[in-house]
Amino acid sequence: MSVRKSSEIETIPGNEGTKIKQYFHPHNTLNGISYSLAQFTLEVGKKSLLHKIKSSEIYYILEGDAVLRVNKESHQLKKDDSFYVPPMSEQCIENMGLINLRFLCIVEPAWKPEDEIILE
Image 1 (tube, helix red, strand yellow):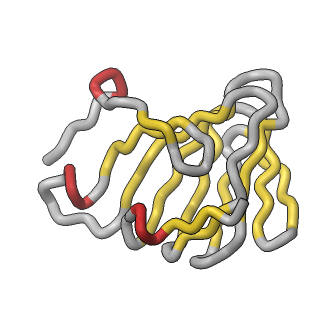
Image 2 (cartoon, rainbow, N blue to C red):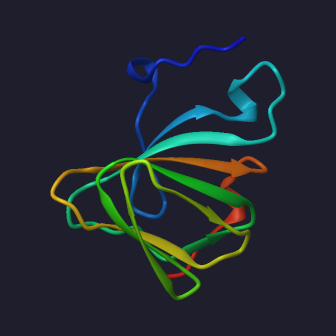
């Protein structure tokens, strides 16, 4: 069993412009999971760089308002909304609210730096 406390997880900068807390990933979980789960924060008025990743992703909005662009389609998301992003989709997310945007991202198979391609 693994317990991951937010207060004990280091925040790291994401390649695409976000702040990330990696909760579960095969490298830090003893039970051999194949996915990763991370919390992202995006400041007011900011947007992530256009990128794509070889894995599928599920975004879950914890707080804030966002526009998620996937393959040139825009989707408005707010607290408690979720969205599936297919593998190799061009994507970026923009904070459209007045507070920091916080969201969870589940990546299957687990995120690896070499699987992410920054497009801008």
